[in-house]
Structure formats: C-alpha cells, structure tokens
Length: 412
View 1 (cartoon, helix red, strand yellow):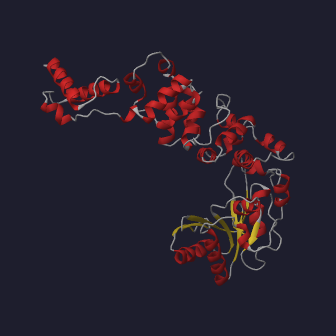
View 2 (cartoon, helix red, strand yellow):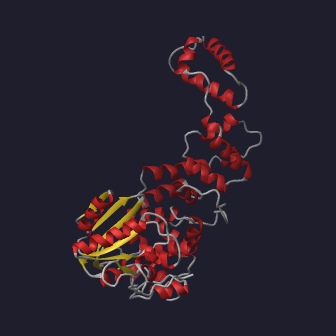
View 3 (cartoon, helix red, strand yellow):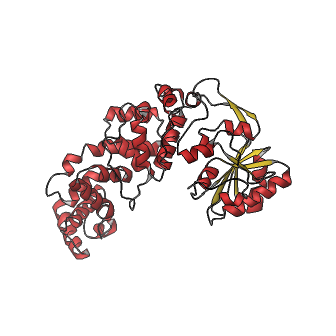
C-alpha cells in the first residue's frame, strides 16, 4: 500500500524505530543553521512511500555536502568519510549510515563513460537518477515534507513499474541495465513497456563500454540482495548475464532457496561459476577484474565441479571426502550443496558442519615424545591420525598413542 505524501511531516518517511529519525532531525537542523537546502532523496523516499523499512539515509545538499556531513559527524559522534573532489560524504553514526551528496547535474560524452559533473539544484539532481521511483525527494527545509516528484515516480510506484527517466538512460550508463533487473527483482515490479525496448536496444555490447570494476560492483550488489536468486533469474531472462560473459546462465540454479537458509554473497558467484569450464572461468575473472577472493571462489568452484563424480561414489569414507574438499572455498562448497545431487550435497554438508573441523587429539610435540622422527614425518603422522579419527578408527588419546607408536615403529 502506498503511503500518502501530500503535506506530511518528514517523519512519515521513516517507518522504523531505529535512530534514523533522530539523525534526520539533526540533518534538518544543521542544514537550516548552515543556510543550505537539504533533501531526503532516492531509496529512503521510495521505500517509505511503499511502507517498507528504511535502513539508511540519502541526502542531497544544494551546497557543500562534505561540510554539512562534517558538522553531522561532530553532532552525532559519528565517523566521517568525505570525498571533497566528488562532493560526497558518508557519516556512520548510531548503527546507521547517512550518505550526503552535493546536488549536481551530469553530462555523458560517450556511452559508459563517467559523467562530467557540475553543481546544480534539486531538479538537476533528480534528473540524473536511474529510475523514476528513485527520482523523488522530500525537502528538509522550506516546504518540509512536500514530495518533489518531477518525473512521476509516485505514479510509477502506484503502477508498480520500473521506468527510466529518458530513452538514452541505458546508453549513458549501461550499469542501469543491471540495476533495472535488481530493482525489478527486489520490488517485484516489472520493467515498464516503454523502458524494456530501450534496455534491449542498449544491451548488445553495452557492458564493454563500462569499466570491469563497475560491472563487478553491480554483480556484487545483486549478490547482496535479500532475494538474489530472483534477481539473477531476471538478469538471465533479459540477457544481462550473457552480456557480462557469454557462458553465464541461470538454467542450472534451483527454483527456490529456503528462506531459513540465506547464503553468503559469494555463494551466488560460485553458483554462477558452476557451469563454467576452466578457460571460461579464467576469461570471466579477467572480464570482471576479479579480486583475489572472487578469483579463488571461481577457481575452486571449477575444481570442485570436477570432483562431483568422485563425491557421488557409494560408500565413501569421511577421510576420502575430506581429501577431496580440504582447502576449497567454503563459498564454493556451499554452492555445491545447492546444485549437486542429494548424496553429494549431504557429504559436503557433513564436511562443512563436522568433518573439516576434526583434528587429532595429539599434537606434534606429543608425536615426537612417542618416537616419531622430527621433520616431515610429524606432518604425515598427524594426517594419518586425522584420517583414523575421521573414519572412526580412533576415539581417544590412548587410541591415537597406540597408532602413533605403531606408525613410528614402521618408519624406523
């Protein structure tokens, strides 16, 4: 249900008992004292009108946003991160985040380029936004609480559609193509009839005009969604995933994920990489400029996929499972639990929850006292003891001592 916005106090936009209301009041007071115009903009306005919880604040300042942010950080006892060159700042206080940006107008000189930025007013600032539902503002000074909505965002909230502000929007910034899928999946709103053709027209080759880091950042934001599977499916249907890498697909993903078992963000990266061959995985890493943690997940997922047949063999001992899985990324293993047969998923699940943490009761110094020679033999003995404990051949310190003495005698 859409919340009425006409002539309402700013507080109606904060459907939460969090410290956000107090922080917003401080922004309002400090902006008034500084003689600048400040507006609540974007996602917080959208979500409040939809009756959804607001988690953070986005503020547009017709004036010096970093200066206002510095005053807010002092007043709220928060942590300030400012980028004077870009006119942006973030204040983290009382468990919440306030993003402040100097109102600006943007001009794109070529597709996918970062825009040229000039100071502007709130009309300019809203005109640079991605979708109408994100292009609304509420003044914190002057006509407090009156919705500023020059692009029909409230009408599109009522119609439940995702619509761009103009037909060149996806050409100017192709990352908006990914965001269209993300907001559509998150809100459950279809992409508007006059927006989908513009998306389809801009899509071929669009991601090649954007930096690899920006593409990866948009993927990361999908993985961080509350319902990433829904967004990924939509991105697959729209052809967005194949525009990032031609072998990416969602056809192998499960239909649903149990809501009681949310997955870590990089599990979804592993899920996408599950169908990639080694050469495709390498190209994918290059194409998104994958940092080391992403590259490890992708590489380990490809390696793990090659072990699935072995993991599905009957009567596999825990030690053999551990030998196959030790050292692989937990994110890759969690993805395999979602995508493998029940037998393989059960074994990987046991490994994650139980087997990987099993270690010998004896330590290296104990083995030396029992006659195991110093050097590589100690490591070999520890591995043998772990194998025995995993497979139920030892249950106590005494059992391990007997096995260690026997092992030491055999190495004499």
